[in-house]
Image (cartoon, rainbow, N blue to C red; front, side, top):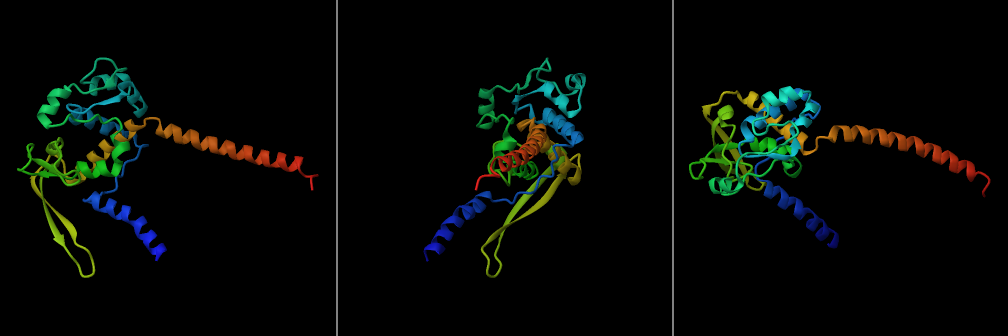
Length: 243
């Protein structure tokens, strides 16, 4: 009985977490090695996100790691700064933003590390029209979010209906049904690719050195493995006469 009680207590946090998640998260197909995707995500970020959100821990000149020249960065991505060495800050004043949205839009430098790529990917694809909210928009992953749908011109307008279904021997489950109200400038497949690229870029700025860090880590582990072999042989040589 004690073992059973302990097992139940261990499972409770998992059940509570599953209940808290609500809308099921989709897997984000982002790839940090896809430079074309990262460049597309950077373009979407500066055109649709930086009006409200910034990335104050990321400098423009680091985008050269994505295969862009400083001239390309200056001509196509710098709308709120004059030097490529500056950080990607938004021009929206925090006080006015809090008045307009009820809360100042957060900086997105490390949002991918705090929320996760799957959460962001699903969030960007689950906005829907809701006349009850001040902005006229709502989100299935983040209910009653203050942020309007910045990418609605690409995705179009959608409606969401939530139904409760219960099958024999199972708990009640919510089923989500989407309806396309107006068509955006992109198809669903194209918009999913746009969301993927944007998430890919947000993951990148959360830790720009992630790829090189992993590569260095592999080399370090290999060197330690070789050193372990020599250390073991040396130890064996020193102790071979000890009984």
